[in-house]
Length: 156
Image (cartoon, rainbow, N blue to C red; front, side):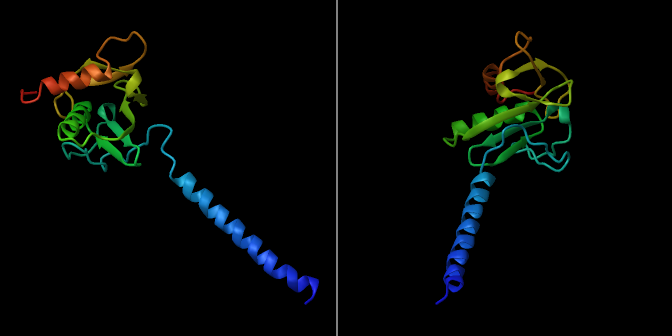
């Protein structure tokens, strides 16, 4: 056996190992959770709570789970209702991030920075839109969810 014929199996093994490492890196990278909001396909995404199309950007919301799912909402109140109903049913959503669309600007706001202000009309009549900023008027996310939960059964 010559030196070049011994090198062929080593070369094949090296190429195979490189291919396996590439596949592993690609799989791990593809399983990363989003670092920020995901843009929906407007009027194509369906609200996870009321099943209406998400078509009015200034009222849209999204909940990203740690399992990689994205739940879309056409009204911030639908997000609050979905979270409350899931928790009450013992199936709390495994939340990675929550993003809400700014009422006046074409951008997303993290739930931790969101302030919910009264506005009418809204897609499902919950009566709140989102702004952001330290010291901004309005409810924080926890107070907003509590307010929506307290209204359950009342006319919107």
